[in-house]
Length: 287
Image (cartoon, rainbow, N blue to C red; front, top):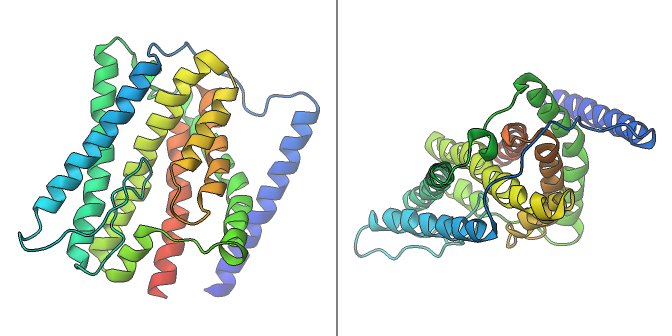
């Protein structure tokens, strides 16, 4: 099994290097890295972006409060981290038991999905189309192919950077790691998959790559990709230096969304990226 994993990693790295060299060649000849699809400016403004972000925090707070209300009255809920990333509202202290941790992981995932649905409904009521929301792709097969190719390109360098920072600068930490250390059951693994592979890619890509970046594109053009990418990385502060490679991921996902005019490929990219992380985590905890 170890030999097979090593072989697959080698193939992935070589493929990534080949694609990077090919992209450099296309850039030097003036070719577009990803074809630009026609796109109309989004119809919302900065005030709406701020309002929706505040609504996300409210959704998160309500879902976490509901999860904590399920605890016995005499119990004290563990301390939680609350921000806009996929590790939001997951407790640091697992001494109260894995059941409480599971409730809070579930609450975080529900909060992200509720936010996405409510925010999309509000924007639709205010006149935004499904194209404005980024949930339609005129060429879905091409979008899927670009998502997979982008994943192949960015995974080796970003994971190498993350491993270097973890080994030589500051160890990586994440509340989900604490959760799986407390409970390695199928239920806990399923919760992590639901939160990291399903809920987080949908909610985070919708907010960062469409609500935020879509508005910034009307003001900054291509520079909106940089701002949204940096914002995405900074939203993950608190887990060691893991936010640094996540800026690189945010730039790749933002560029993909910018060129495609839809967030569906970036959602797939995000889901694939998180899936690899979950596999690594589960393998290390169960190994």
